[in-house]
Image 1 (tube, rainbow, N blue to C red):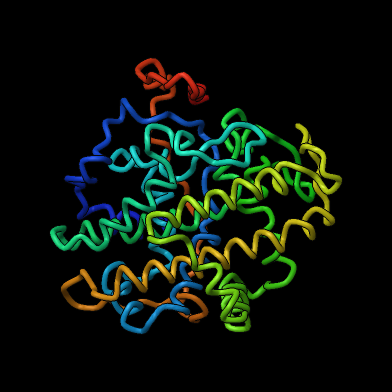
Image 2: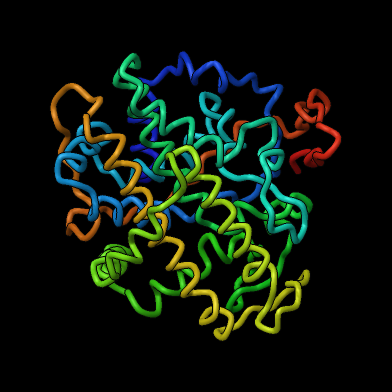
Length: 350
């Protein structure tokens, strides 16, 4: 059994979710079922967003986060494993939002029944500061918040409803069979590591964190500015991702729509890499903003856990062992799901 799966069950064993706030008390029968497809950054992407944030936050905030979840970057990747379990299956629809094809004007109705990555960031931002919640609820809120800030910066998490954010568009990337969504989740990242950072992901994380240090204060401030309050942040961020989805992710180098059976070459990798890295850096910078605000008064009480991550030699590079999807293959939830007139009912799981 892999290190990640062991870590997953260490996290899950003591956790029983009693509440998710009244707004987010979810009956599985009301959640939009989604295809058995990729709806995440690769774990390396999530870990890197969190590692960049940890390099930027105030020391007391970093200590607080470590006290709450231990290895912060690994905790940021946890929700992708958790959603495959019965306990957290309800959270699958919170990793993304779907938009009409080629639309660049995200509206609130795109967040299906108010449950998507946009509203989830707002929800967990507030739960993190709710002093009435016990430690375990704050810990869960931190894991979800870190993860969803990463998700919202992956452009195809604001992709088209009709193709499941690029999951239905199949082709090859540098000779490997892959969906368009997979190119953005892992294809570009894996190529970057293999080509330029053979020593491992921690060296790449340090490289990106160092790039933030070299950025002007004006640029960092601009990335962290999002309206009059934190609630407006996720809406601004998803609009940026939606724009990138339409202008970059769904088109090829000639500006034409990416077709079925696409063939992406080294030239496509070179074109997409700056956008992928910019979004990961931007996610880390913005996560640092939220954590500095929400963890300035640490909600956790108890001993600080020892955490080793980022460019520490102690980081364990373990393969990911996927857990079986905790969903019935007939997806009976589809028959019990009623869509609003302007929404598309997802197809059953295959």
